[in-house]
Image 1 (cartoon, rainbow, N blue to C red):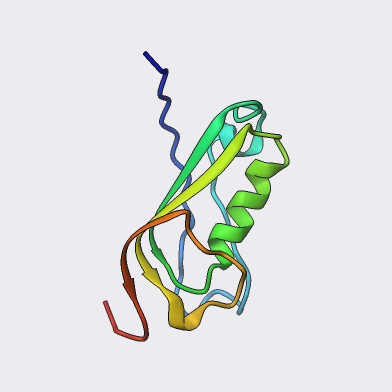
Image 2: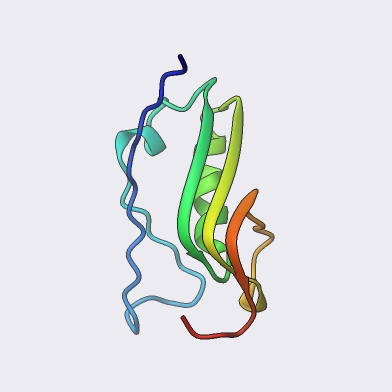
Length: 99
């Protein structure tokens, strides 16, 4: 049976307080440490909008040389994409609709 380990990282969005394009990740040691090395990693995001957060987080994890990185978005909002960040899997794909 495969071993599954869950870790949580937070990416706070503070409307009006964040400069355009700036991403701040408050991460557990698994993102900033070396716990992802040689492992399969799945990043789960509720909504992928511009893609900047997903790109930044995946880049941090990639530095640890995982075996693979896959991404899943519950909602993939494609109309505002500013970074090359397409999820491996997505639930609902929408354009400019407000959710």
